[in-house]
Length: 217
Image: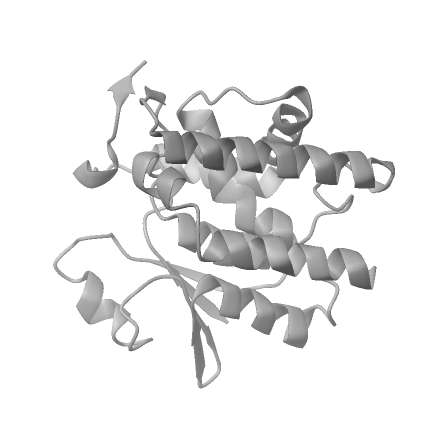
């Protein structure tokens, strides 16, 4: 398989597809394209008509959109184990992923992913509410599943994959969280594949000015 991604420092959706493969030990070839470069769209068009990363290429099939990619991986390579085993937990996991996949516009717009930076921003009331809602959600899930592990549903799942870019954002912008939510972020940041992504992000030299938001600290 091949996974076409954008810059690791900035491309939050690319991280989701990449982490879904890496964390579940599925072999693939990584193809990275520079966001906003002259050749980005022409190169991407070789793999997908959507014009966005990530794109998963498996033989003659191209799958785009990070949620579709994760579901494809789950069905074809994980025998359904990418989601929590318990059916109720699985339903909740899919619900929170779908919710964040189509929302969190305040966080997305006001705190663009910029893994290697340390910034400060003044968040709008809407973004602050989104942060508070996530804090409460993560804390609640951790309290319910703590006996099974340190991730949202105990063991690592696709739910954690989808919140991985948010964890990087909160780290970049120094967002204050409750003890439980902070502990979850530390768990995610300590994941070896998250550390590998961060290392690669730091090594990149491209600058995407649109994502260099806030005051450097």
